[in-house]
Amino acid sequence: MMKGSKFLFLANLFVVFVYSMAMSASQEPTPTEVTEILALAEQGDAEAQNELGSWYYAGRGVAKDDIEAARWIGLAADQGHVPAQYNLGLLYFRNRGVDGNDAEAAKWYRRAAEQGYAPAQGALGYMLAYGAGVEENTVMAYMWLELARNGATDEFTRRLYAQQRHELAQRMAPAEITEATRLAKEWAAARSRQQ
Image 1 (spheres, rainbow, N blue to C red):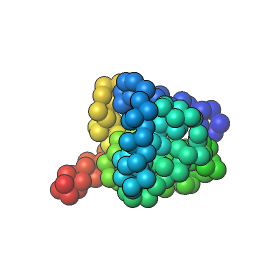
Image 2 (cartoon, rainbow, N blue to C red):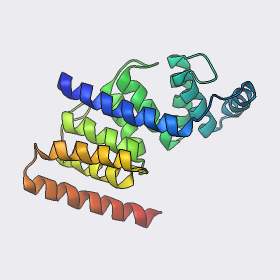
Image 3 (cartoon, rainbow, N blue to C red):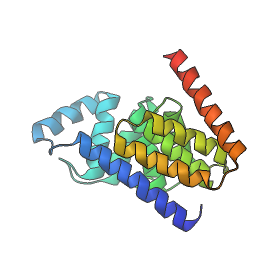
Image 4 (cartoon, helix red, strand yellow):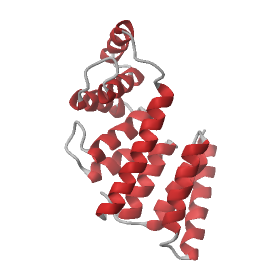
C-alpha cells in the first residue's frame, strides 16, 4: 500500500472509529459499571468482552492498555462477535496491543464484513483497493465499499464510504464498476435471503 494512501485509509478508519465510540460513549463508566462489565466479560459474555476491550483501548473507566484491549476484544472476536471482529482487525492494522499485520487485519475485517457489518465492509474494501494484506482487487474493493455505504447507519458515514468509493472509481474502467455493482447487489440479495 502506498504510504500516502495508507495514511488516508488510517485517517478514515480513525474518523469512523472515533465517531462510533463517541456515539456509544456519552459518559465515563462508573466504578460499579466497570466491575459489572468485568464480571460479565470474565464469564465469557462476548458483548461485555468487546465493550471492556474498547474501554481499555480508549482509557474509559480503566487505565488505557492496548494489550488488555486486544486480549478482551480477541476473546469476543473468537466467539464470533461481529463488532469485536472488526475491532480486532483495526488493532492489527493500527499495531495496537498486537503486532501490526495487514493480512491478519484483513482476515478479521472479512469475517465481520461477510456478516454484514458496514465498518468492516468499508475497511476490507480499502484493504482490497490498495493491496494491504490481501491481493489488490479494485472490483471487490468497490463491491465492499458499496455494501458499506448501503449499510451505514448515519449520513456522515454513508458520505464517507461514498467518497471512498468515488475515489476508487477514478482508477477503474466502467465495466469494472458495473461488475462490482452487480456483485454488491447479488451479495445483498443473498444476505437478505439468509436472514
